[in-house]
Length: 109
Image (cartoon, rainbow, N blue to C red; front, side, top):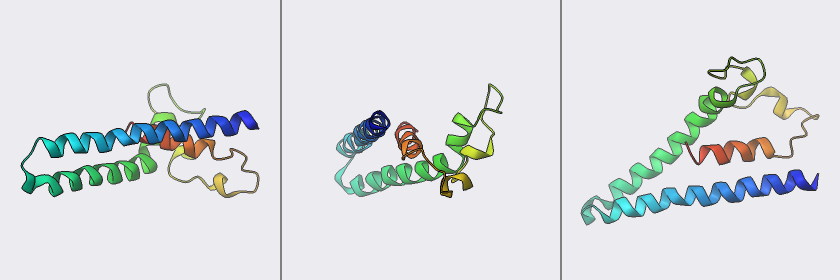
């Protein structure tokens, strides 16, 4: 149980570090344009992260990982798309590791 919690913490910590690269790229882009366009480029970066999270949540993670009944090319199992109903049952025992894994993979999407 302690190892699983450590794995979850590490995934979240590494995901936060990777997500900060998004801010770094935003600063790089803001520094390479005229001052009057800075707000626009930063808003585009924020929208990119927000829309990327929504699309990754709804379909991307399911296509990337799927479940054990999928083909070798693309995931299609219903248990990995959006929130699956099993996540809300009392027998749910993943201790947040599946959500931490989702977050970590999202930071690269």
